[in-house]
Image (cartoon, rainbow, N blue to C red):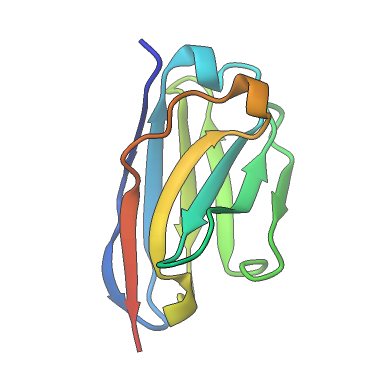
Length: 116
């Protein structure tokens, strides 16, 4: 069964931290670059961080230096450590493969709300 399950979101004050987790089925995770995406209210979903199967990472300029993506290949899990959170980080966070042809159905996401 192809599945993505995100967790770890919540309400946090500006400057705080959260750690998101994404459990992925093997067909999506294995050998694929994975990404964390977010969708702010009224905006399109955007890619904020990626990690290859070998561990190379890349970040959107808006989160660089504050967010860290990692993966545990043995657990088919991707993480997003978010520090120094800002109100503009508010949104629903999703994970999925980076390549369109490798993606599975989007999960329910996890809500992150940063209060000022």
